[in-house]
Image (cartoon, rainbow, N blue to C red; front, side, top):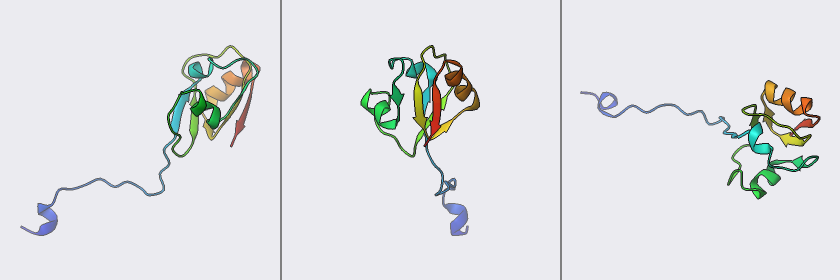
Length: 92
């Protein structure tokens, strides 16, 4: 049997794939009203231990305070919820 058929097959991982750390809106509710949330503040408060290629904010849960959120990516509904609460969104 040829060598390529005897060896186990492995999947392909693209070299340009980026891994984002996912943060939900409900986790951001622990910050005080009017505060600026950036990746450094997220690590400082212990939400994640390390930031791989960036931070993505998702809309699971709800937010009740106006916050300024700076992240690499946002889901569309997360943007709408943050703005509806009186906050602002900034993509890095």
